[in-house]
Length: 435
Image (cartoon, rainbow, N blue to C red; front, side, top):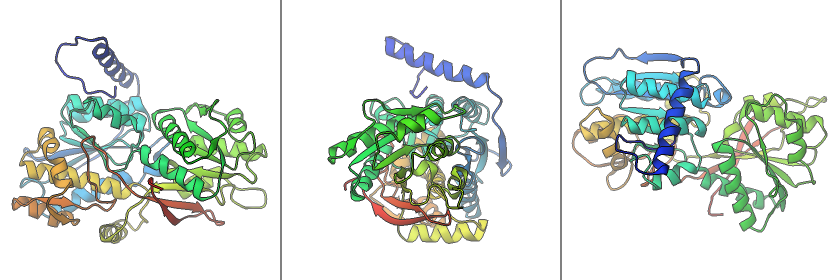
């Protein structure tokens, strides 16, 4: 279901396996409730560009991804206010993945085959993108994820599975895992255990972290028996006990919010987490998660002092976007909101550059508008005006420079965040994979 499937004859066992995997994802989608269509804007007319948003409004990642569809909508409104794409307004169709691969695959099928979109911003969870990307590629729909960070996609892109119809504005976990390992060593931790959600995201991140931490001279206490938990488990007492066994200096948790909070509550209630620093990732970077994990009897937050990493961004582009976001929504900029904005803007700039409102057109120009050479520009209206004028641009995003390589990846820097005594999160440092 992660693979690019074509209509050519399938001559090898691998090709048959890929075809069966894709068929299974479609069947799984048919057996699940129809994904929620959360809106179309503006009314479709003529042959204007139509794009989709495939993001979690409900499910395990909804607390992190809640603002992402709004960022996509805001980007479309921004471009439509400055004459749209190829002379017509852009239409947006939004679908809820429910943080579920089957529902996400079914939603991607609807976007591609019913709505006939040319590009899609999504998905967020790597397991959902894994179910969607083969469908997108088969239908020649450009898929840009603002948050799926599994290294699996890099390997598949290298194999040519997606034929160029995949990119992401968040760097792969190959880099974030290295950054988290660098943070662990920077904190002086020598013995670390891991616990991960048992899906594409969790397992791949865990494996990358283990390799990077060991390379830096650290010891992974759980290496021989990695602790991985079922995303659908109701209780996680035994997994918590295993993760915090053997007195680690820290436990690196690769978690989703709803299930991750259950695991960390269980560790606290068993008296296992006292004196152990919890290392976290972008997947749980929200105050909601801190509150879900809860408080001690004396009113302190269980996660006080926890440390984590999240893809960061610097510069004037982020400042300008933050000002616009605050003005339009009245909200703070949360994780992956800039990445969602950038993914949407790139789809529209590429369509304008191609002078075609098609997936093929976007795919052919996406790296051209994202990368050097060209005029560096971050304002979407200024960028699309330059493209209309026939000029080369190098779009500089709110999430970073968004230079996309041949595998659809970007390399980013990482913010270090911590949980304060009042339960809020604060960025306190930066860390690089190179460290």
